[in-house]
Length: 137
Image (cartoon, rainbow, N blue to C red):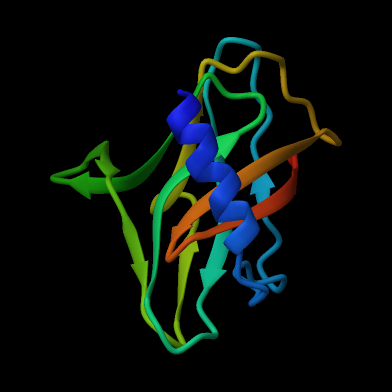
């Protein structure tokens, strides 16, 4: 774990100043009970000239955070884990219900409407975007 913290510290020091989250699609998280799971939705945009790669995320109240994609196959809903999400230059990727989302599991506290959680998006190259995400019904 100390190695990961050192890498995170280096990434924060090298963080790009370019915006990464589109304010026109307000980030939000669903309410949930302590110990349960919830999801985070937002739009990640890349105004730069190089691809951005979201490879991980951390949520302050979650025991674990993963990138998931919801899918429908033959009337059956399912989720699959995504290792990375690539955002091409000049484009955006929407994280929304029934699509890509951040899955927060093992919540260490109940989330109620009006709360705010801290989400850190770990993005290559060497960048962390920190979001303050409201909990909304």
